[in-house]
Length: 126
Image (tube, rainbow, N blue to C red; front, side, top):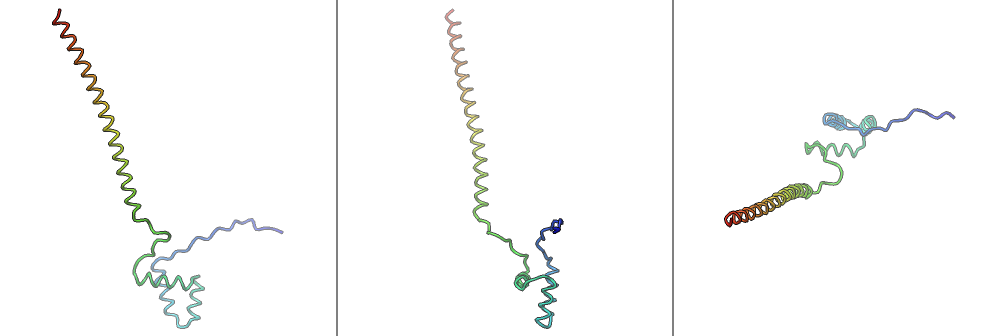
């Protein structure tokens, strides 16, 4: 009992260019009998549902749509509002620091002005 030591790779999903899709659809439509059409689909490894989707895409002249859940239309607005909120919070913090520094400078100036008044009164009385 010898097991196969070779690791088999996982097949990747096939993708077809627009030209390949058009070529295969043209061959399919040109086939005279259902047997020829079935042989083409076996040779290419395709299902009839895939060909039906390709016909729809060709009729729309648009690339295939995105798969999965559609994006929430409000998510862009939400991210924009969050960024704006963060920007305004940073601006508010900066303004609060500036106001705090100005308040301390004002208190210091008042203290200095009060000391200078006391010194000028002392110099006048002497």
